[in-house]
Image (cartoon, rainbow, N blue to C red; front, side, top):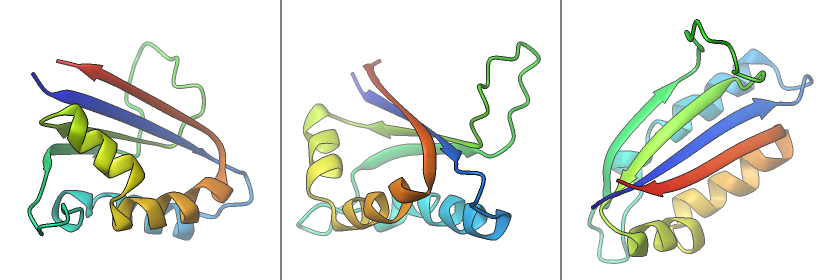
Length: 107
């Protein structure tokens, strides 16, 4: 069983395209940049998108979506609370957001 971690960003109107792209590019480096204390990588898979192509609607104005796969809940806990790359990113990005959607599930 793995843990799927879904994150979607809706930026404040004041956040320009250049900053949005910077955030997108930085998050897209997480699979290689996020490491456990021993230096090993722990993100199993990573997918992202910055254009909603759904014909069903329901995107609710979100600009970017990321799907991160972890091997265990322990890895998610480390990622959220201890990984220095993720912790610094959260401090940088949250002030730029109008809304964020975060949803985890076991698969």
